[in-house]
Amino acid sequence: MIVLTRRAALLLLGALLAAAPTHAETPFITVASTTSTEQSGLFGHLLPAFTKSTGIEVRVVAVGTGQALKIGERGDCDVVFVHDKPSELKFVADGFGVGRREVMYNDFVLIGPSSDPAKVDGGHDIVAALRKIAAAQAPFVSRGDDSGTDKAEKRLWQEAGIDVKLASGTWYRDTGSGMGPTLNTTAAMDGYTLSDRGTWLSFQNRQSLKIVVEGDKRLFNQYGVMLVNPTRHPTVKQELGRRFIDWLVSPDGQATIAGYKINGQQLFFPNASPSG
Amino acid sequence: MSDFGQASAVALALILGLDGDLFRIVRLSLGVSLSAVAVAGIISLPLGAALAVYGFRGRGPLIVILNALMGLPPVVVGLVVYLLLSRSGPLGVLGLLFTPGAMVVAQAILVTPIVTVLVWRAVSEPWAAYGDALLVDGASRLRAIPELLAMSGAGLLTALLAGFGRAIAEVGAIIIVGGNIAGVTRTMTTAIALETSKGNLPLALALGIILIALSITVSAIAFLLANRGIRP
Image 1 (cartoon, rainbow over the protein chains, first blue to last red):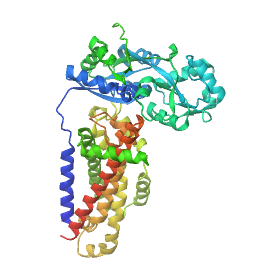
Image 2: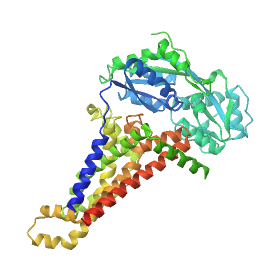
Image 3: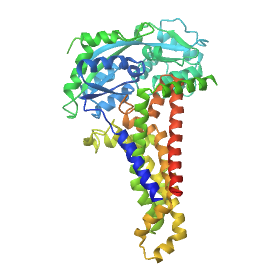
Image 4: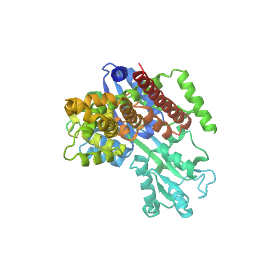
């Protein structure tokens, strides 16, 4: 039995040594961002280009916009890269973030089943389409996770004059999950959902789902990037973080964003704001 | 069935292709979970044995609490560890959040109660059978503990394997404290969660198949080692 314990200990030690992190001390920053930028594959295309030109590694924690801002508020990341302008401006106004820059946009699309029980296919008025879905009591699947997409969806329902809280649990289903899981649920329920175009284009388990409404200017989805306030959190790597932000809005970064395509379709459209 | 066929093919292609990303993810999963079990073992072996050997005040309630903690919800442990390790939290200066170290801490917390209770069970049996003899021989209770642990080898192995099984299969805690960062804190389970999110179900299922194969391998190695120990 002693043999066993010694051997087991040796084995364990070996495994531990093998698992010890081996990468050298590459400078890195931590970026809290959204599932749409990660799951659409944009970061897989964008970040290696940045790392190649600057030698800075970018570690992405991909969560909803609400949670990403919370991570920044607590000082657990260096840069926040999200898409919900009202909450971003509040984040900056409250002193949690500095140097906000607009980077790019994509748009939201209304996804629905081919059977289209609410008869909204082909429309270009998102608010009218939501009213029809509510009238038909067709299943609508919501992110319900306080993400940028979720907040945009809630604003559109408000504009349509429909109180989805009352319908929650009936035709309106709140999944409290990311875009991908929400699309999985929507596919299984033959329901409708609001998705960012990037995640939709790279999503693979579509079943009978398709885009039913697009092109309304209210579906515009702006992404912004900002540094976590280094005065509030001294551990923030402000120099490296600023280099990342500057690169994103530079001609190089903007061209790399425009160059990301799935099946020939461009997913994100660079529109960096002038500095300030 | 075609889903499973496709997933098996993807799994096989990943393994045979010696996929570099897969190798890193597997190594990280094993490293984090084995480290967590090692930490748990350092606490649980003496604690479990002490529970069997000593009759101290508060032993009953402690066992009840440990039994209850075996069912700790990973997502709650993840949240608590996150708040502790956050830059704004009491242990923020360590800078552990979003690193493998944070994942080891979370898993060790999840695993320790399970291993402790199982060690206590494993040691109780030889203690009941030989405890009096050991004490008559003049050994103190403290001295009896290593002997008892040596007698309970197979039971201890089961305890550690149960802890490992809990750790390697867990996703709720590590995805919060690790952040599922590609190449840094992405493990088998968080990768499966991510691929499922992307709707890439064959790849997610393939990773699941590999994870299960991995667990079987670890338990087979432990089984072989135990058998060798029993019959040298």
